[in-house]
Amino acid sequence: MSKAGSKLIKSASQALTYARGEISEGFIAHVPEEVDVKSIRTRLGLTQPEFSLRFGFDVRAVQDWEQKRRQPDRSARILLTVIAHEPEAVSRALAH
Image 1 (cartoon, helix red, strand yellow):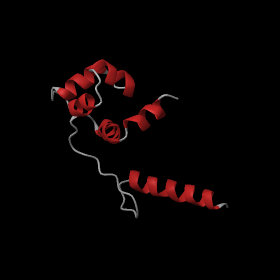
Image 2 (cartoon, rainbow, N blue to C red):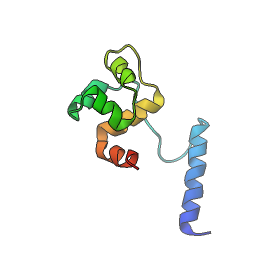
Image 3 (cartoon, rainbow, N blue to C red):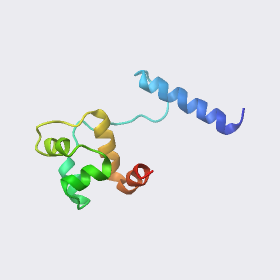
């Protein structure tokens, strides 16, 4: 097997171990309990509808998050964290 193939298999195995909640070596995702959605959105200079369209969120969910009526679920918090740090990378990835 090639070196790249071995790395892919190892990465997939680590991801499966992590998904099962088992301890594994290497990278550990730190998902924030709270995300300041309004701060992220305003820093990007986007309205709620623009933010929702650009990143694939329901506009009502964004409104609820900003008004603290709802908390983003784990997956949304992960995406919001990436948007906060690398918004252009997320935009590029979602453009395809």
